[in-house]
Amino acid sequence: MTAAPPALDASTRPAGGVTVHLEGRGDELLLFVHGWPDRHTVWDGLVAALAPRRRCARFTLPGFAPGDDPRARSLDEIVATLLAVADAASPARPVVLVLHDWGCFFGYRFAERHPERVRAIVAMDIGGDAGSRANRAEMGWRGQFGALAYQLTLASAWRVGGRAGDAVARSAARLFHAPEPRSATAAMGWPYAVQWFGAAGGFGRPTVFVPSCPMLYAWGRRKPFAFQSRRWLERIARDPRNRVLELDAGHWLMRRREAELAGTIDAWLDGVLTRSPAPC
Image (cartoon, one colour):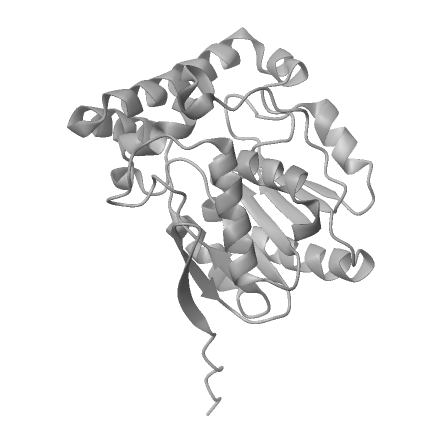
């Protein structure tokens, strides 16, 4: 009879006002940051696949957990949260960021401000030039109108709040086939309110993000429009350490193609972490 594999280490700890969930084993830490309308559980499958060889840390963004204060957060606050989580989970070594949706936006800004804390980046479906002139041109007027409509709807749901706002958020989550639409709340729309209404000081106009550390960028083509331009993809792909992965999937790649994605991440990290010892 084959012995069962040893249980993976798992624990939680507070950091930066959030609860950090730690799993797995290994020297490198993968720090997962989700987007709308998700929580840390959106990474369950991917973490289960990667944890036998990688330490994984994840948390729910402020305002996205049940009972959280629904107020808008500034970019400075979220970057500070990421730094606190990284320092608590991996105080002596830079981390590998694993990002999706708003997690990409926040993770890119974190990497810009704290490059010494980032070893490599795995990003999904929101590119470093999302919303740029090149990206908007490829989206066309229909795509731009669609993006504006849903984002203003979610920003407005946050402003309305309560049951009415929650109902709008859940309807949008069902429309976009989010993994857990019933858990969507109006409070989760605060990033859109910061972006479009200038809540908490607004996000400003970020520059196009091209990391100096290795990057794996995966995106799904089964969508009405993409949040990156071909020009940016080509720029990323020119660095031999990087990889661009186009998948026959929608927005939630980590749920729809988790086995393929986990294998790709594992193999890519084996290569880049050996060849590129320095952080961003």
